Image 1 (cartoon, rainbow, N blue to C red):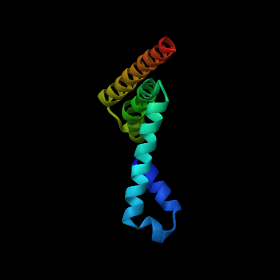
Image 2 (cartoon, rainbow, N blue to C red):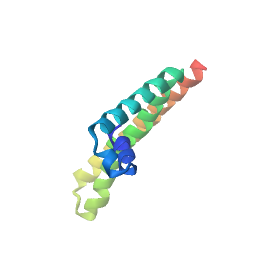
Image 3 (cartoon, rainbow, N blue to C red):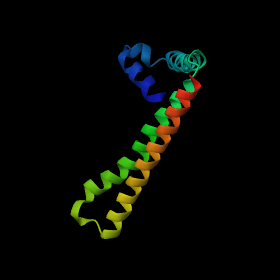
Image 4 (cartoon, rainbow, N blue to C red):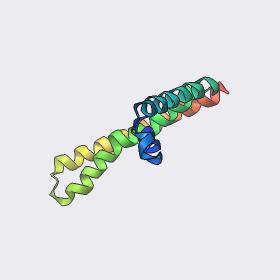
Length: 110
């Protein structure tokens, strides 16, 4: 929530965004709106599982391994290359399985 709140604060005038009450009210509103969305959408948890299984694996496992290979390039040892490729491959497999599981749960629920 913090990046979204900071982006909204940047759009507000300086006098308003530096106020403590603005800080509290903005974050409270964002959390309350998230809770309302979770209550109103019957399959909110399943959608979050889908997003998590696809995007979190991508950002936390696959991209760092591939970025390491791109940054190091030809200076990487054989063990580093094999390890990075194995981590990225395992991440891709986990993302596929997690996404399939989430989509199948969504389909079975509705």
